[in-house]
Length: 185
View 1 (cartoon, helix red, strand yellow):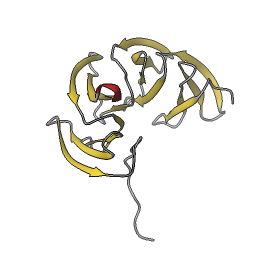
View 2 (view 1 turned 45 degrees about the vertical axis):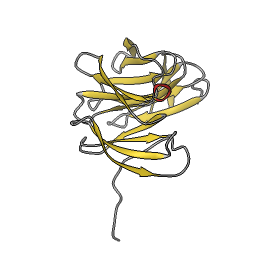
View 3 (view 1 turned 120 degrees about the horizontal axis):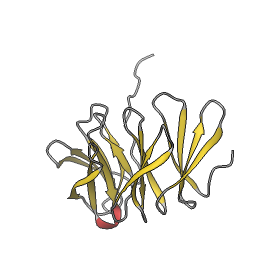
View 4 (view 1 turned 90 degrees about the vertical axis):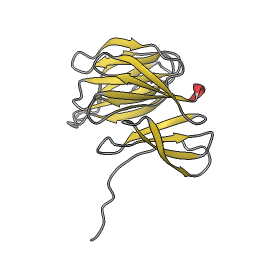
């Protein structure tokens, strides 16, 4: 399968039908049919796309780009419907309720909060030193954030806009994933 230059981040739609892949060196997103593994569209986005997230209803893809802010893609039409201007946009996580998206801005040591109803910047929150990876807990009550500069992962309470816990981890953590661990036989 031929995608774009330097494929980087990948996300599977909740229905399992479509795969979205950032092409870091190609400043684009490839849309892949999961049943055939065929690239069905390549959508230009901001320079150096590194963040990728779907809304809970799979209607929008948000792409964080270091040189282009956050590009909003309509999944039905596979077209760019807008850009949210941000400096050094990194990874993106959409809250499970779909009301807000969070964007790491590692070069500015902050998180940007996007209002999903208006697709506008709501606020920024100072956050450690080089925040990068983002993942919501399943109920949306916590956003987990890696901090490369401090070698930590923090639990952030989006309702209170504050860190509620921090764990020191190995050197320069990049990503975080939240899931359920099966126990028992």
